[in-house]
Structure formats: structure tokens, C-alpha cells
Amino acid sequence: MSLSFHIDFNGNCQAAFEYYAQHLDANIGMLLPYKDSPASSSVPDNWQDKIVHGNIKLAGIEIAGADVRPEHYNKPKGFYLLLTLQTPEQVKQVFAHLSVNGEVLMPPQKTFWSSCYGILVDQFAVPWKINSGG
Image 1 (cartoon, rainbow, N blue to C red):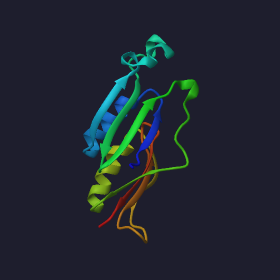
Image 2 (cartoon, rainbow, N blue to C red):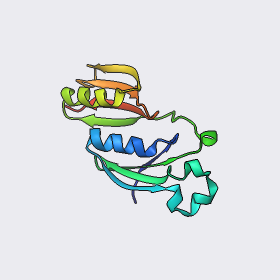
Image 3 (cartoon, rainbow, N blue to C red):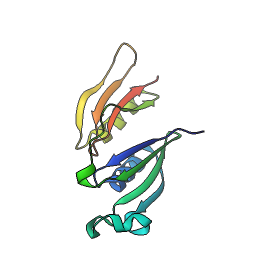
Image 4 (tube, rainbow, N blue to C red):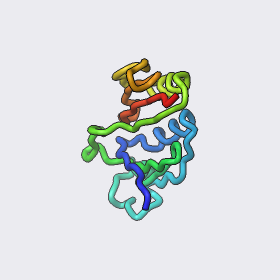
């Protein structure tokens, strides 16, 4: 048995996974475009290069994703990806990368449970909580 997450993206799945690979030391597995799948006939020509299925491994956890046509897309809500790092410096560094063109909900700060904790929604509409375990 395994557990992973699947995130719907608004046409930017590949950009998101490439950004995470670059800034979070994650490894992209598959990025399958619609044009190379049986689902190609279900999307218009301008959507053929979008991702029908992708996956990335981050901190030992698989995150799957796909581009969802605009008329079916809903921003993620009701959950956050919680990323725990060793030091406050790492939290601040990752937070800085993920907050580029995103929305900062709580800048990194000391809390009663963490030496450094912050909340943001990244430029791909994915909500994150970044926490220091040290």
C-alpha cells in the first residue's frame, strides 16, 4: 500500500514540477502530455502539450498532478502540503523560493511549536506550510 497526493493544475503542471525540482531538490518522474496519451482527443489543439499525468518525488513522497481544463479547474483548498526542514535557515530559503509570485499568508517566524514556521500559496496555487523540525 502507498499513499500519495494528486494536485490539479490550471495548465501549469509542468512548470510547477520543474520549479519544485529546481528549488526543493525533488525528482520528476513522468510528465505525460495529452498528445501522447489516449486522452488527446478529449482536449483542443492548444491543450495537447499540457500534462495529463505527471509525478514528482519530494522528500520521499510522491506527488502526482495533471492539468485540468479551465472550465473544470478549482484552486486547491482545504489542505496544505506540510514541508518540514531541519533548520530555520532552510525554512526561510525554501519559503523565499516558494513565495515568488505567490501569496504569503504568514511569513516565517517562531511559534510555540516550531523555531520557524510560515504559510503561503505558491504561484501555482498550491498551499504550503513550511516548518522547522530543529
